[in-house]
Image (cartoon, rainbow, N blue to C red; front, top):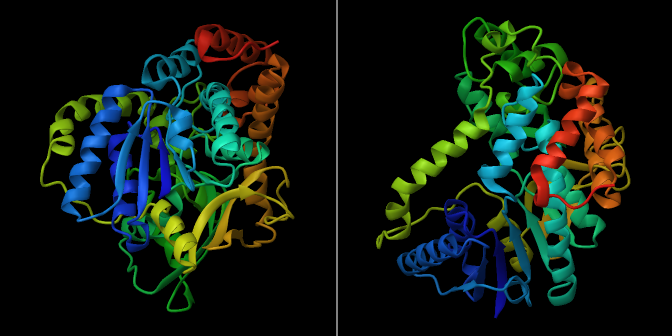
Length: 432
């Protein structure tokens, strides 16, 4: 029996989306869904939920919860990764509260910035453990990574020799959400997106073959006269000429322009939700208490296929029916010619039985490549820090982070890193 292994299966709602999607695919009905999570209670919840779903969808997949990771991985053809190392308490709280003492504020802190760096540093060793297990018990499996920080973790798994693609749902919803927000028709649109994860660019968008970017820019400029939830991205669109894939609350902390202690009025001007991720975590924990019975114990639970790429990738590989995705892959051969080849980029990819074939994009407009490079600098140094266990590389990654460097002095950045290393304690390996 073929096997799809889900690491972090205690993410019950996400497991419902991705594995529920797979249950709707005819070509996957002879698969085992192997679930693994270090949280036994959440693992049981997901197993129960998926078995209810299986019954109601008339699926013939086999759902198995494993208590041993290597056993869950053994013989897997596909591995889906959705872990979070350290959780909200203590890790996310630490990532936000200690920088706050230095006057450094964040919104999400799961990709770049000081929070993104430390999220990487505690997650990379776990990913390396996954890679070691996979090389032993499922060396040919595809690793579908949904865990942030996307670019760095995907890069690490590729360096470990694992066939990996990073997946984020900001690509496939970017154009439709933009047009919806501007009250524009979504009929017969075509678009092209490339860049890096969470900072990929809507390079082209047409409707019935006609470029609609001029109309988008005109409406976006008018909308900036009122307060709304996408003010940072519309400002970037106005100043740099292109719309970016990930949300305004994310992009507020990827650039040095928006969250500034010296200019507190910018927070209101751009409607920036500081501490958004901790607030979201608290809400999700509370909502889960309410949702648990609805999802886990609902005997009539059903599912419609979502827009997540996971099931479409596996279906394309199993059936040899090509499918196009936006995937995070190594920039081998200069897929984006003005970004570093050792960086992970987000580009259109074709998927079929032969695997994942990234497409050549060429050069981004120089201003967009320049913005991407500011984030890539910190990503690559974070990888070096993790692989060499060097404190100096942690400092350098933080010193090159656009938001951190725009707010703090060199001495304060180094002191902040030391404080975070100490506060994370055993969540991090020993750095020298």
